[in-house]
Amino acid sequence: MKIGIIAAVQDEIKTIHDDISFDKEKVVTHAERQYYLGTHEGMELVLVYSRVGKVAASMTATTLIEKFNVDLIIFTGLAGAVSKNLNRGDIILCDKTYQHDFDGRPLCENQFEIPLTNRIFFETPQTQLNIAKKGIENFLANFNKYVNPIDLQKLEVDKPKLYVGVIATGDQFIQDIDNQKTLYINKVETLAVEMEGAAVAQVCSEYQLPYILVRIISDKANDSAHVSLQEFSVKAASHYASGIVQEILSLLKTN
Image 1 (cartoon, rainbow, N blue to C red):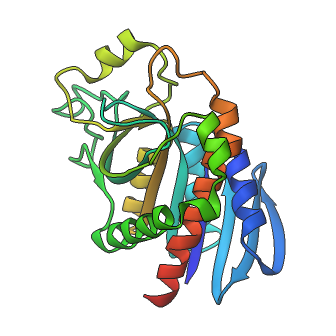
Image 2: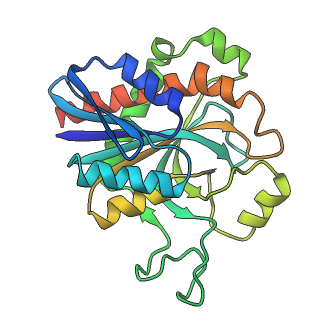
């Protein structure tokens, strides 16, 4: 099995790369991106930093499929909380995703629907969803192995939880509470918002390739969304991403 791993933030892919030992590693530069190729415990891996936004993520996912022939894509990164139940440091496993900034009417009947697909949502395949859920549960059970508790205390992260649900994607960083209400009022029940996942999901769906989307809550997606975002990414989210990926890889090896 060959697995493509995409991180939305450069610090995350660096941490994943540094924490996973590769045999016979090589780096391939393609379309201004570096793809790190290697084997890990008998599995072939391709790691890449996609850059931000739907176009960047779509291009990266397509390259992983077309050029590197991956069998599965794992995407991880930060997200802003929409649900009031979520706190910084919580983990969202996406079971379905949609583009909150897409409106193709009158080319299609419904807002958010992607023309010619008759679909609003792209669902994570159940087999991969089950594996990812177990992997994240294992990560949380071994949490202090991956993340420094002192750093988490400074970042006000306490007892992170796993949620499974809907994530929305759009080409905008949501940091204004009024804008958030405009996007989500009377619409789909959404846990979190980010900038790449639905694009990756659509690409994988059209190629009939399984995928996993995991997001780490960095903020409340309100007017304080910028606070300590970089620090949280470096000291917490990057280590979350690495630990989660490692636990998922361990399960994929045995399945």
